[in-house]
Image 1 (spheres, rainbow, N blue to C red):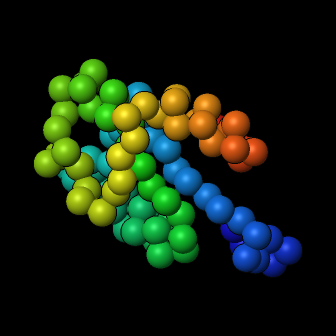
Image 2: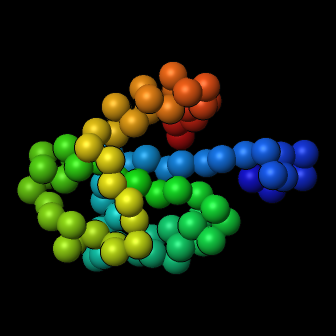
Length: 88
């Protein structure tokens, strides 16, 4: 996102699911990093399937994030729209 050649040309969405769900929990230390990403224009969404699988509810997660019914489904849809999927 810091590459000046990409300025105005890049859309980024962070999709968390499975073990990544922990990043979205209020009792973890990722609030400032997530808010920083959002401030930079990154969409941050959590998979609802993973919430159910882990027995979590939305009250346990940061209130500034979005949700998608399925993390993998979101990646499939974005991929079909021409997005490049980057996994850490």
